[in-house]
Image (cartoon, rainbow, N blue to C red; front, side):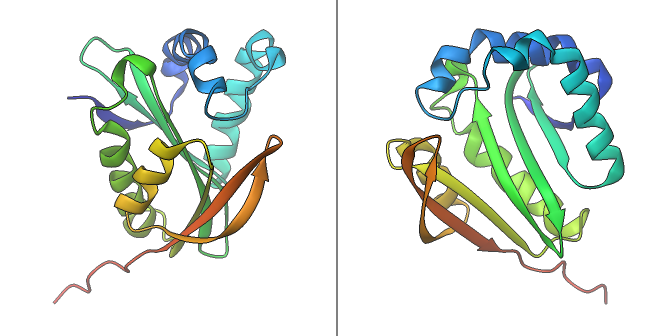
Amino acid sequence: MPRLEPLHAGHADALLAFERDNRAYFAAHVPDRGDDYFTHFAARHAALLAEQAAGTCRFHVLVDDSGAIVGRVNLVDLADGAADLGFRIAEKAAGQGLATTAVQQVCTLAATAYGLNTLHAAATLANTGSRTVLTRNGFTETGTTVLDGHPALRFTRVLSPPAALA
């Protein structure tokens, strides 16, 4: 079973392979990262790690037993107890419940380790898989938006605070 790990410098090669191998699959469901992302991947990866070190974002990868990355779950723009959630699962790993489980784990981390109380997310109308993952994890639809020119829905989840120690 893949394990969720905080993104670190050692993930660079596996992360680039994950993004390249799944680019066409992802582009069918979410906005494409564009050629610049791949051309300047090393600088982009370093920038992500700097954002994480500054506490403004929390990036996670799902790593299988061979060390390959099969998914990502990210919390971005952490501020005032809230963050935006984004996630993607490799085509070869889709439909196995990995996204639902990984988002659940990140929701727990958000409340317990990162001190967040609210998460926001969006998914295009055509992306029924992501919308299902969000609703299974307690997100509720809160409105509409547009993602890369495609109609989308906004979702919010209020996180339960950690139980007080007795």
